[in-house]
Image 1 (cartoon, rainbow over the protein chains, first blue to last red):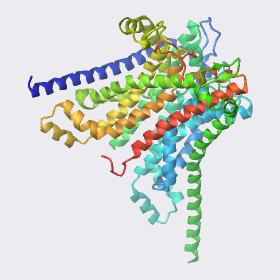
Image 2 (image 1 turned 45 degrees about the vertical axis):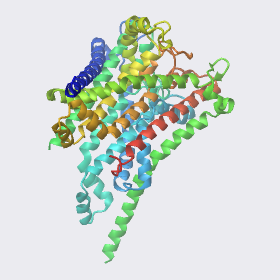
Image 3 (image 1 turned 30 degrees about the vertical axis):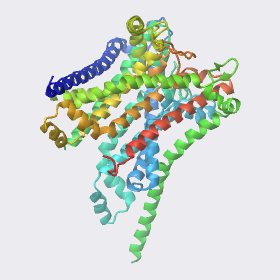
Image 4 (image 1 turned 30 degrees about the horizontal axis):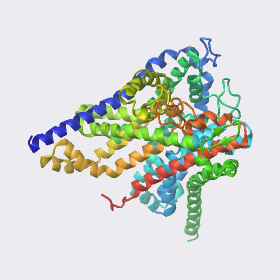
Amino acid sequence: MTRMQRRTMINRIILILSGLAGVIGLAMLLWIVGDVAIKGAPALNWSFFTELPAPPGMDEGGLANAIVGTLIMTLAATLMAVPFGVFAGTWLSEFGRDSRLGESVRYVSDILVSAPSIVIGMFVYIVMVKTMGHFSGWAGAVALAIIMLPVVSRTTEEMLKLVPHELREAALALGAPYWKIMPQVIYRAAISGMITGIMLAVARVAGETAPLLFTALNSPYWAHSMNEPMGNLTVTLFNYAMSPYDDWHEKAWGAAFLITLAVLSVTIITRLMLRKRSKH
Amino acid sequence: MKLTMNTTGKKAWGDSLFRSLTLAFALGILVLFAGILIALWHESAPAIDKFGFSFLTSTAWNPVKDEFGALIPVVGTLVSTLLAMLIAVPLSIGVALFLAELAPSWLRAPFGTAIELLAAIPSIVYGMWGLFVLAPIMADHVQPWLQTYLGFIPLFSGPPMGIGMLTAGLVLALMILPFIASVTRDVFLMVPKNLKEAAYGMGATTWEVVRDVMIPYGKKGIVGAVFLGMGRALGETMAVTFVIGNAYHLSWSLFAPGNSIASTLANEFTEADSDVYLASLIELGLVLFLMTFIVLGAAQLWLRRGVAGVDK
């Protein structure tokens, strides 16, 4: 075999292997999504969205309280994490760019982004659930907010850094103080990117389970306030899937499909927004 | 004159307030991080006092006698992560190469988007799929097959139950695959076109361009992506808890059920009925936090190194 033949043969083998890896990887993942859609879609009927959970064995009931609980806690978490994260990101971009302190805040945020979410849940259990003496929707929302925070602050920082320096200089030259320039010029220039980052963070925490296990816990009833254990989709899914009852398994597939659908739609919409913006 | 002084005075006051306010929130992130470490350390005191360093080397896990050790969950975490990395890293580099260099161009954009979307699917969906779909297939087909042909290796001995370390590693691999693949793809896409074209122009085959140009160029990013994926795998809860089997045994067999730190916490935390039990679980959480901290911290340092262009 000549040298050239050997090279082309090795090339072909590697190409086939890599193509195979590509096909296997994609096929496995499409298999998962397909299964979730096929098994989950039939469970989504009217009562799934409107009724409270029923005991096993009765082919009725729904997860209305869990759906509402997840929405409320995600919203509360967003309201807490966004101001915190935007201010922190503002400091990182505007004042702490080359400082050592800025570098350490950045470093710690990047670690927190991927820190185990179950440990965050445990931390909130220690500082909130244990001191207040009971599980609560607020504790769940705080745990989700902590997970969102580093994502929001880092994307805010990146988006603000994209705003050209000339804009700041022009506004400063007009005599405007910095605290007026930020909301009136810089945030406005970066707003769509910041919203993208926030939406992606929302999509991420909406599907989180581990941080809610010891904070919001779960509940089969409507919550009267966020001061009590709060039903939510992901922990309900976990409990239902681990149970031995077939009708609960069906509901669990339904919940999995609903969560996947919600997370994917938010992600896709956000990406479309981003693409539209970059075209302009 | 008076007017100018007034406005500058006001401006400086407003600006320094704005600056301090944003600084307070930025510092809040550091405080939060320190708070997590201190709270976990403080609350695990009863366990640290009682077991000391032997906590890390003991295989005991007996809530009735209040005896706890971290070895089995720690080993389970490491083994499931290692398995996941062994499966996911070659596959995702293959997927990334396919998407960046090999696939026909009309396929690249939709496949690339699909992979990125898959990275957004919550891990509990992967875990549930593992329990209901993958575990029966493992028990009925994959594990008996492995046993027939590789059964002489202790790793593949024991009853094929479907649920256990091997299935947990596999589900974990599927969960981190889209993440590592999409980051690696981005790294490959960043390789300048003229570098690749120069290599092709000298007669290099596609594989030679990949091996001698793209991989060396993107080495830093790929290694970073692998470590970030590993950090996620170590702390992943829901993808593992469903399928790892929840058993306290150390076994050579990958078919045997086990436990990881995260799955132990998910299963037992709300059921802990004594102070030492709760403290032991929190200490496990602290161990997990430190493990991921080391991996993620190293990954971030690696990625930051040579930002100034020291490293090529």
